[in-house]
Length: 140
Image (cartoon, rainbow, N blue to C red; front, top):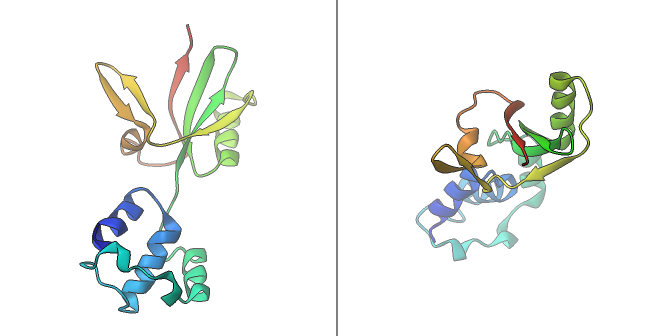
């Protein structure tokens, strides 16, 4: 796999730390986008500098996950949010009560919608701002 492909995957899958490390190595000309990713050598990294880049969010990551919040014994709300705390707070504002529990799901998790299947990652592209309710599910 080329560095370019790995870097794009990091951006697509919101792998902030690795993306910042690659960005640093590219900026320092220790690797190029056309190199094989096996050439990435983290011993060449100024870890203090990369830590600062990550803390300052130089690449502009805004991680958004999907959370399942239990409404009652049969119903669940799915909320996109940047953290579990944000999902719970948004749930409380939206439904005027606390959820019974809250669990993060992988964005790669797929669900049936209409006649097709969609992942939470692809569904996230349909929303312009976060936090937001992706939908509700009722068992049985």
